[in-house]
Figure 1 (cartoon, rainbow, N blue to C red):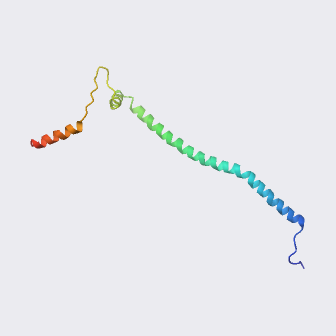
Figure 2: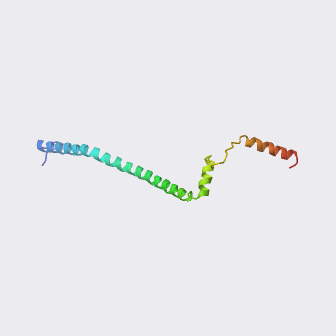
Figure 3: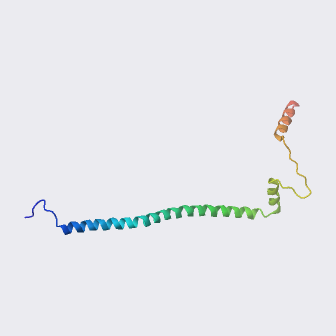
Length: 112
């Protein structure tokens, strides 16, 4: 009949502590590479999303470039940027909104 409260042999206790120590050592050695792998996967997902967005922007710009090769479109875009053709003169007109208000007021006053 086994006795209660009997302690296991010293060699068994020593083996258990060695196993626990080995397990902790392996866990410590694997922690950093595993964390680096998880971080790299996360960064890869983020970067691939950025690449996808940039590819969509590139496709849109290529479509715009394809449509802007006509002379009329280029001329319209240049005029929107303030460019003028050779021999033309650029006039900057200020106060257009006030002029329109006065014109409307005078048209209303004259029954227009």
